[in-house]
Image 1: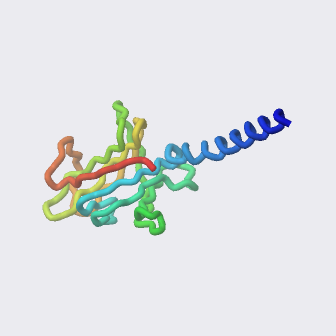
Image 2: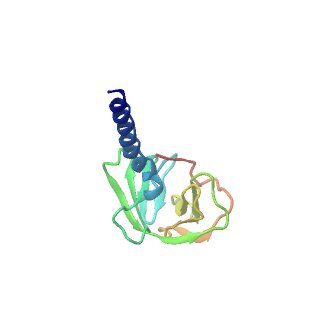
Image 3: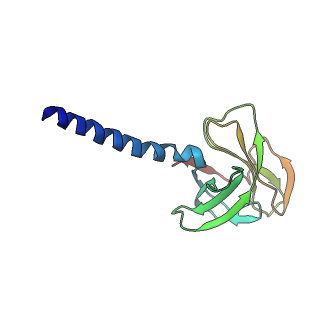
Length: 150
């Protein structure tokens, strides 16, 4: 009887662990990132007001370059955007967003997004009112972002 109890306990533990593994790896597959901004930003023509958002890859896209932006509860899509793959030598430890330089009075426009631990990322087309150069420095008009994987 004790032998069956141990076997059932091990089986239950194995099933529980295997059920959790896909959910733990889901963020790496879809690159799900939750971020908060303190001012409006332009993401390829869509202006996001200050708040918390979720950005992730479209799961049905075979090319892995389509990004969706949701509200924090993930029950409203703000944008579905086809991005261009971009690469870098350094691998960021944290989520990294870079912005285009912008014309005065326009919200900063998102240029690139790199997921933690990846040297490839996603480049967004400039929105209206952007100067198509990338700034290596933080400007006073660049938003403060806080990001983290879910």
